Image (cartoon, rainbow, N blue to C red; front, side, top):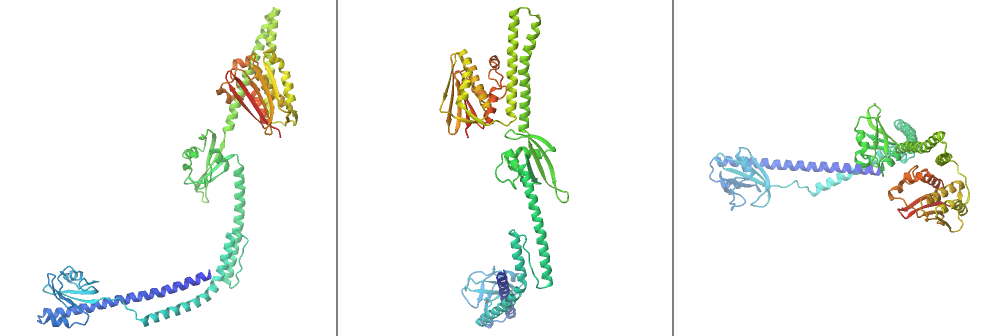
Length: 559
C-alpha cells in the first residue's frame, strides 16, 4: 500500500508539472498568435492609409512591409490586384473567411493552410472605402522550445519529483503505518477472524482511533455471532417444518423458500432473488397474492390441496417490507378423510346386509311351523352370521396391521407353512374339481411374523380357488431370487379386467360385487394381503387377463 501511495503521489506531481508546462506553452502560443494578428492589423491600417491617400507608387509601399509578411490587394469583386509572394493567382478571394468578416466592417482574421503557397498562415484583412480589401498574412508556427529550455524543464521536473519523493516517503511512514495496521485488521476480520484487534500508541488521536476500532470490532463480533446463531436456529426450524414458508419483498422477489415449500411445488434449484410470477409452478400462489383473502385453499398444478395464509413483514419503522406465506399440505388429510368416509360407508353397508338377513329370517321363524323350512332359515341365519364374523375378523386384522403394532420376528419355513395351507384348502379345491399344486425351489427361510405370513398365503390361495371355474388349476410356487423370497399364486380363473387392477388392493373394492358376495368375500382380503406385504418390507404385483386367469407375485426380502 505504501509503495502504491508513494507512486501515486509522484505520478500526480509529475502530471501536475507537465500539465502546468503544457498550459504555459498553450498560453504562450495563444499570446504569440494574438501578437501576430495585432501586427498584421496594424500593417493593414498603415497600408490602407497610403492607398486611400492616392499614393501612385503602391508597389514600393507594399514592399516596405517587414520581411516575411505577405501582402495581398484584392478588388471589391474578389480578384487579386497584387500579391507579394505570387503573381499568377487567378482564383476569386471574395469568399475567404477573413474577407467575409472584413466586408462586415470588422477586422477579418483566419488561420489556415494557404491554397496558393502551401503553408499555414495567419490572415488579417481590412476593407477600404472603395470596397477593395488589403490583406496581410504571416506564417503560423507553434511556440518553439529551444534545447536549453527543454533541459531546464527536464531538470526542474526531476528536482521536483526527487524532492516530492523524499517528503512523501517520510510522510507515508508516519501516516500510512496505522492505516496499514487497520487495513490488515479489517482484512482478517473480513476473513472470519472476528477476535482480531489493533494496537496503535503513537499519539492520542491514533490511540483513540484504535480504541474506537476495537470497540466496533467487538460489537461487530457479538452481532455477527448472534445473527449467525439466530439464522442457524431459523434455518433448522424452517427445514424441519412440515409446512411451506415463502418470504417475498415488496416487488414479489423471493427472499426465502424453505425445502418443504420447494417439495410441495416441485421447484428445483436456487430461487433466491427470483420473482414469484416467473416460476410456473407457483402460479396459484402468485394469483393468491393479488387477492384480499388472508387465508385461502388452493390446488396446485399437480393436484395437491393446500391451505395458504399470508402476513405482512414489517420493518424497523413499522412499514411493510414484504410478505410471508405459510402453506399447509392438506392432501393427505383430505385423502384420509375420504378414505375414512368410504370405509365407514362400506363397513356400514357390509354389516347392514347380513344383519338385515339375520333379523328378517329370525322374525319369520316365529311364524314358521314347517320343520324343513325352519332348518332352511336357520342355515341362512348361520351363513350370514359366519359372514358377519369373517367381516369383523378381517376388519380387526386390517386395523391391527394399520396400527403398526410390534410384529413377532421368528424363523418361517416358507415351504412347510405353504404346504400346510395348501393341504388345509385341498378339500375346497377338490369340491370344485380344481387341481391345486405347490412347487418349491429349495427351502427358503424367512424372518418375520408367521401368523401374518400364513394369513397372506391363505387369502391368496383362497381367492384363487374361489374365482377359478371347476376343472381349473391353481399353481403355487416358492423360490429364492436375488436375496428375496418370491411367492406366486397363479390360477386359470375368470381373470380381472385391466381397468380394475390399479384399485384391486383397496378396501371393499370388488370387481363384480354380486359375484363376490355370492362367493362369501368381504372385500378386505387383498387389502390385508397388501398391508402384510408392506409390513414385511416387500412388494406385490398382479397380472391378469380376462378368461385366462390371474397371477399374484409377492417378493419379500430375506435379510
